[in-house]
Length: 224
Image 1 (cartoon, rainbow, N blue to C red):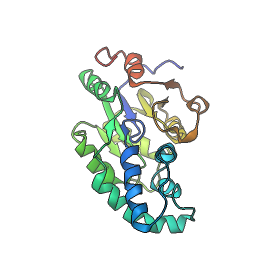
Image 2: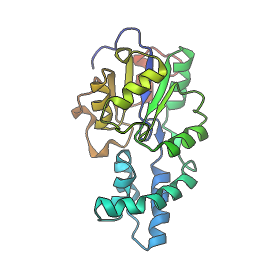
Image 3: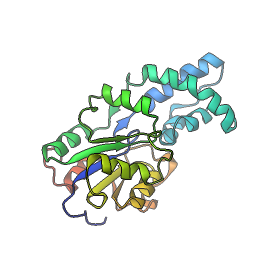
Image 4: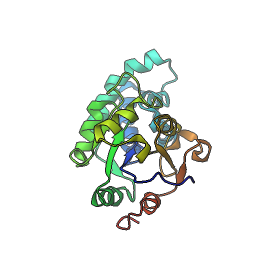
């Protein structure tokens, strides 16, 4: 684990698999869609592993088709998901106190996700985070998305913080790659979906098992 940068100003997070455990609702939406079209429903564990890769990867769990065919299925799948996306989705254990502790210390926090904006904005509103996050950058905010560093740099700009004094926290190799390329301190987390990978292999500056460890790193006694 590398030492933290001096005078940390903010922490940026990936959304699905890092802040929110959303796999149950994403799988439920796939189940509804599969029932509509008469397809077999893949196991929850299969879907959970690929959640960080987005809706195309989720659909591929049920349909062995090319990208063009999966893209044709995507609007209906997302329509179903938008209707049910907050039924069972909850912050991972320890995330709520961590965010409160960041705010109590007057550290800013934000979200950089590859999830489309219309879903992200509604979901964080249902989590009551829309007025708390200092920056929210979605998968369609820019022409590029993670692992490109541009969304991370835009979030730093929106939060009015210096990248070198920021942390980026995520459960996917792309989060680490984007954060590192943007000049942030990178944190890989084992509590998320991981896309079948091993966070120890991603070259992150720190690898953590629980949000309370991040709170402890930052000296946030309220969450630790």
